[in-house]
Length: 489
Image 1 (cartoon, rainbow, N blue to C red):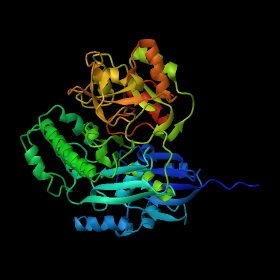
Image 2 (image 1 turned 30 degrees about the vertical axis):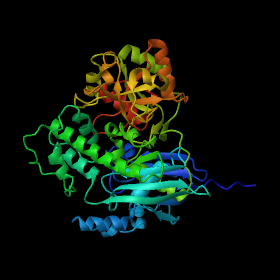
Image 3 (image 1 turned 45 degrees about the horizontal axis):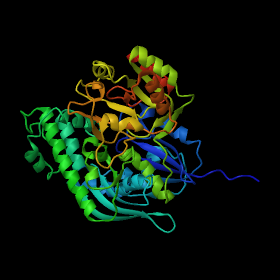
Image 4 (image 1 turned 180 degrees about the vertical axis):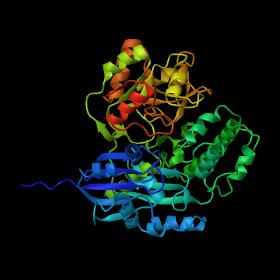
């Protein structure tokens, strides 16, 4: 008897920034999820790369799901004075542009931007019922939404929109505009503003709050606060954004739908603001790719209908072979800094041990050395990756978080004197905890702990500023050659 090939749903987020695709099979398994920029080597690439399309050829795609409604987006662009792109009015037009007809005439479904965000979070979460909050720059028209999500009697995910905030008022657009005002790249380097905030004082919050009411789609005038320090602008913007986020969380809590929070959208990457989410909800789930790229998985989840089987974020390109635990430990002991490119690439903006630059967190000069390798500003902090059972000995975890497996929250470091390389100027660290899951990074931490008595390492992405994270072995070889750091696979 001939077996029918397993069918697959292809979810796509593309055409704006940080294009990505996700593939879900008929059992709800995520068989692949990856970022176009890792293939093209162009940071935040908006378009699906031809090599990525070729990699998708191994799957029997019988359905394509797109993450937003093009005609609604075009209407909003017309309203905002950006004009209409007539060649991108329909989903079929966009997919033809992105996939070059690769999947022919398979069924196509189109899903709303914020609904795709919501589904990426809820259908990968451990919850049967949750309040979903989505905050980003902009979808078609929505800039923040609150949803009631649950599974019905047939285990189909259902969503009811409880509240929406619409363009032009936008927390995400505000933060991106501030990013540009400081001289950084909007829709890319907002995380630098977050790190910079700790070095400044929030002395301009009243002025910033007025800005929140304006249309910031075209940015902030370069003469806005012309004599202000960039650090004070960053601190003020962070304070205003946190205030706005917590207002929304309070509103979401007051609906009383569920004590479980699913939080999505690009603003959910602000791990400094995330530290207080436990003040509003008992349990929190943030999918590790909550921005637009993650909505490729959200669109696929909506087309699938039910719960998606989430196990970890290692969903991208595979570099075969055993995780090089012993080689990494030896290199760390001798060189203090080492790269690893092994197994499947992480889905999301943060390296979690498979495409990482790792270092001993105890040296007084390690942070400066790693920042120099990565061509980053010296004030930039680094994250600790720690055996999960040891986290409470070294960090004060915020309320509502018993772990932080995807670097989604900051906590106060209890021993900054011993681990200076992973502590920011405000005394906090962006924590990654690793459970006893048999992963490569878990095995490495166990071996490192056995050899040194230290249960953590410094972990940052294997790239330099302005470049995408290493994807395959050829990228790793190039990194090793150009930047003088041994990369083990």
